[in-house]
Image (cartoon, rainbow, N blue to C red; front, side, top):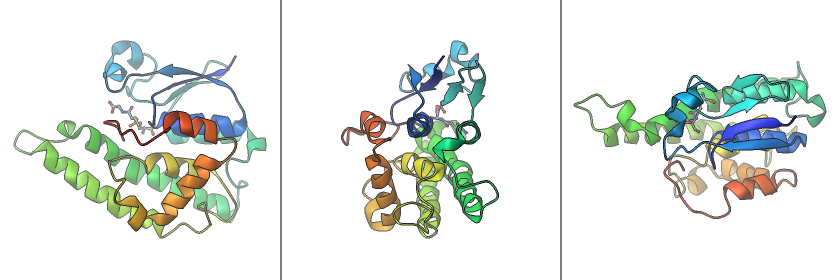
Length: 216
Ligand SMILES: N[C@@H](CCC(=O)N[C@@H](CS)C(=O)NCC(=O)O)C(=O)O
């Protein structure tokens, strides 16, 4: 049986799809219509109680949620793919440090950007809440930018899961005009992820051109 990935174009499920491509594992994609809000349906909540994507069903039938948990599980189960530096190494510690920074400090801003009304009490404007999220977003990406130690990847060690995560998440929140001048290392890293032979086909399926969606 293949992996089954619940996801949507350009969304967080792309991190998992890219990791599976790097592993060389095939997966069946089940599209979730974020624009139509089907992730909120009870049928999908039975798959992922948080009503978000990604969700990965393993060949053994286990349900995995939370993008970082999924990626770390894939690394454990496919050691030959070298998705992270070796356990116990200084490089792995840095890879985990920045993977978790993006997952916990930056990724949550995108929910505020995409759905500001969820975070705006009655008297507060949703547009104002979104602006705060975008300012925080930019500030935190600068922290990542200044800690990219490799060229083009995060670490001199070479591509790891943190690069895939940085490439996918950095495209969001409508910051296309800001990124090239402020976070050029993130841009170079993303271009290298997109051009990697094992990943290029998946990347260009999600981002064939610059057609923005509400979730970019
Ligand atoms: N902590 C979760 C966050 C997942 C997440 O926010 N996914 C977004 C798509 S990138 C989503 O499903 N949004 C739909 C919603 O919030 O209704 C993870 O890392 O998997």
